[in-house]
Image 1 (tube, rainbow, N blue to C red):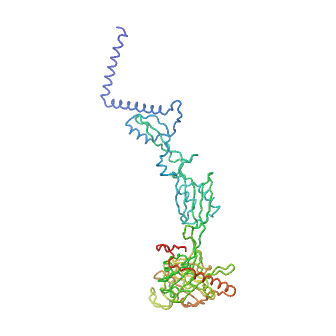
Image 2 (cartoon, one colour):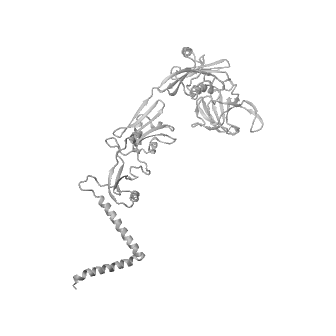
Image 3 (cartoon, rainbow, N blue to C red):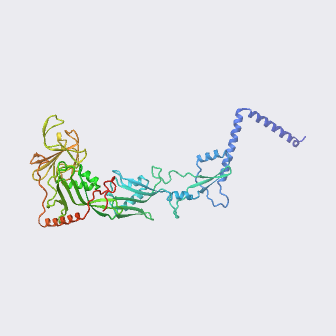
Length: 532
């Protein structure tokens, strides 16, 4: 028998030997684990090779290979959903445009408008950067604003409408690029999935919020002024300053006083700032604690400015006001003398309403203790009370009863925080139990009549918030309710004739103007005035 004839026999014998050895190996645990491990290694290597082949572009294909990796989490989901199926070529695609319904739901995708309000210490540039606007755009907008408005005039409480675009850069067609997606073959079927972008791309330093592209900024520094900053096509900013044309309306209003002038005016729908100005006008002639009684009445002729939409904008002038107290009239007319003198209010005879001292240094006060002997509620015995106490809430503004110089400002034992103001002709006024002093006030400072220099409180020996008020003549305290103080100046000569002519014209205007007893359109909004 030749060697050639023995080859088939030897091959069969060798195969039987290898089979017996393999069977013996598989009979052991180690042998079985080795077989499983080798099989898995071959399977994974084959899958990776298949995926690598799929990424090679076909000859003549115009599709460029993607450099965006498939996220590992997405890969695992696809493997699980495919049940171990084959993964085929991964080719980057772009998503189809948004559907018509999506476009109609958001006609300006990526464009947002946010209203921000400045707090104390905030800056406009900082507020824009807080919503994501880049520092470059914020500084460019501020520079454009400075050509029409001083940024230093910005105050806490002002609101701004900021419109910006956080979408990707817009192409020449005006539409932003569609989100990027990838087509993956799962079980021989194409599946479109989004491709995750780098989360840090286009983000501001230290945040994950994209840098916004400022489009416009709008605010109204006053009710009669609108400022709009817009972005030009070249990226620069321009500011437009629009001044609203206000319309002035004249009102003659009046009412009966049941409790106080302020409440009666508010119930009649007269704007609050007009009522407050009336109180200041009459504070030199009327003691609102003793002279005013239920059943008294008042009327006032004033101007008020409105926007073209009818919104009240600002107070005008009070040309005339009258209070009927106990059957007697106290009438005041506004008159501006020639020259640089400011307008004042004069009575029917031409005497200025401004006395040397105001009757009361606070608005809306109630007398809680008069001048003279009284039992002191804290000390527990009777002693002289050389002033008048006006009960008002803590923090009520205290006005200088007359113009002068602050002679003392500080702590004075039972008076608490105490202020003494020297006036002319030996007169002085004193104010006690103050909670605090107004900014800029100090000893030696000049104050004007009616200027707020402090705020009421209950410092020192006090059982409740109030203002202790004294009038001193040559160092001696006198009763503020009965003392006679010098009146205002009396017009004479050419000034008196001019004033009387103006007063006559005002009387004729009043006779032809109907009296409004309810100025407000809506009783729930008593501050809203109605045009005639």
